[in-house]
Length: 65
Image 1 (cartoon, helix red, strand yellow):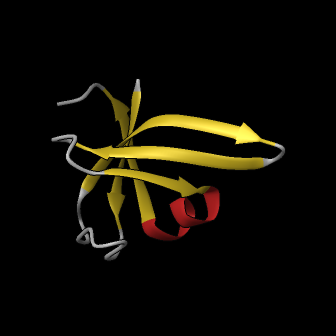
Image 2: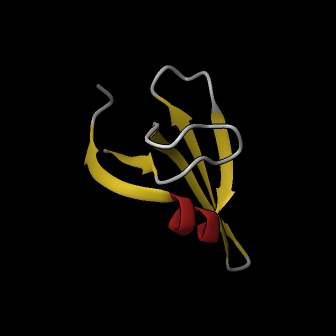
């Protein structure tokens, strides 16, 4: 199952409301890193836990539409 997120506000040139999928999650020495991709796979974001909490809203679990 893939987690779906929605962008709360503009972030790194990506417009508010854009839907992204969490494709990878890793932790090294207590630092979590997340990789998100847009539906069309044109944009890839690598962000930390704080950025995920501040800029994204969790929508649901599910398959890629």
